[in-house]
Amino acid sequence: MASCSNAMNLLQSYFPEWYKEVENLGGPLSGISDRIDFERIRPALSDLYENDTEKSGRPNHDPVLLVKILLLQK
Image 1 (cartoon, rainbow, N blue to C red):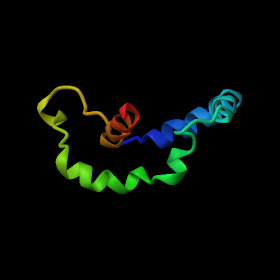
Image 2: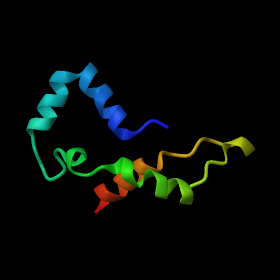
Image 3: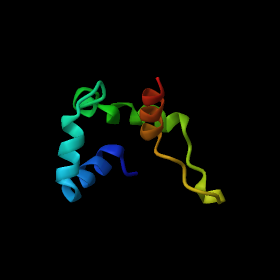
Image 4: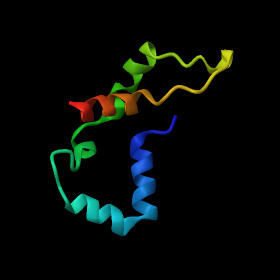
């Protein structure tokens, strides 16, 4: 499952000038991925969040991404 950090790495590689400009704006969330290892919570979340796409339906959202969204909402 792709993580948000992989998406940010992709963003950095394809749009380095834009990423640097956004990074220079700073803010309370600037560099949060350097301070919090979100991948550490993935095993705990995977036990709580089952993917039932075998039965049909859309694939689930990445559980780590959902935690990051909740963090941003606070």
